[in-house]
Length: 440
Image (tube, rainbow, N blue to C red; front, side, top):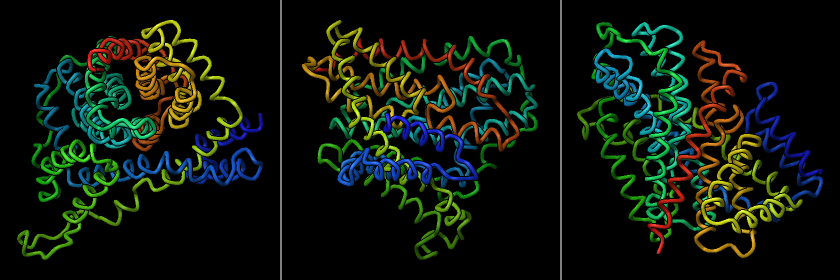
C-alpha cells in the first residue's frame, strides 16, 4: 500500500508539476520517498539505471537532432510540400498530413512528432485560413498519429527502447516484426481519423498565400545534411545491432555530427565561410535533460511496486491468458498494457508489463514473444485513452496551449476513447497473424 501511495503521489506531481516543478524533480521526489521509506533499496538504483540509461540518452539525442533540423527549416519545408501536394483539396491534404506525422514519429520518435509537427501544421492552417473545426481535426490527427504509428523501429518510442533492451531484441528483429504491425496501425489510424474528421474538412483551400518550400530553409548546410545523415543513422542501427552496440551510442554520434555542422565547429573555408544560423546553445538548453532524472526516478518508484507484489499479481493474470491460446493472450496483454498505461503513464506501464512477462511461469515461447510485443503495442497506443498516458500527449497539449488552442481533458477523452480501441485491436490482430510467420 505504501508503494502504491508513493507511486500515485509521484504521478500527480509529474502531471501537475506544481510551481513549475519539472517532471525530473517530481519523479526524484517520489524516488527519494521510496528510498527513505524502504520501499526500494539503494542497490535497486543500479538495477533500474541499467534498464533505462540507453533509452534515456537515445531519446535526448533524437530530440536534439529533431530540434536542429527544425531550426534549419526541415520540417516546415516538408509540411509546405505536403500542403502543395494536397492540390487545394482538403480531403486530399488530411491523409497526407497523417502520413507525414507517421513518418516523423517513426524516424524522430513520437515526442518529436508531437513537439515539432503540431505547431508547423497549425501555422500553415492559419495561413490557409482553415475554419476552426477543420483546424481542430488536423491538430487532433497530428496528436493521435504521433503515438499510434510509433511502433515500427526501436527508436520510434522510448517504450520500444526500454522493452527491446530488457528482452534483448535486436534492431533488425524488432523492425522485422513491428514494421508490418505499424502499417496495420497506420491504415486503421487513417480510417478512424477519416471517420472522425470527414465532415469538418474543407472542400478546397487556396495556395496563393503559402510560401514556397525553399523559403522555409534557414540553414542550407544542415538542411542538405538531413537526408544523408538520417540514412547513415538508420543504416548504422542495423549494422551495429548484431555487435551489441547500444542504440544510444549511434544516436548520440548522429546528434554530435549535426551539432558540428550547425555550430560550424570546423575551419570555415571547408564550407565556403558560411556563418552559423542556428543557436546551438539554445538547442542544447532546450533539450529534455530532465528526462534523464525522470527515467531513473519514475522507474525506481515503479520498481517499488514490483517488490510490493504488483508485477507478481499481473504475472499470474498473464499466465492465465496464455492458457487460452496465442490470440487471446496477444489481445488480452495488449489491452491490459493499454489500460495500465492510460492510468499510470506508459513509461512506468511498460516496465510493469515487462517485469510481469518475465515473471510469468511456464509461458510457451511463441506466446511469450507475442506478449512482449503486445505489451509494446499496448503501451504505445493505449496512452491515447487519457491525457496522462504518455509524455508525447502532455507535450502536445502544452504546445497547443502555447499556440492559443485549448483542448480540455473531457474533449480529449471523448475522442481518445472512440478512436483508440479499433486501432489497438487492428495492430494486435496484425501482430498475432504476422509474428508466427517470422518466428522459426
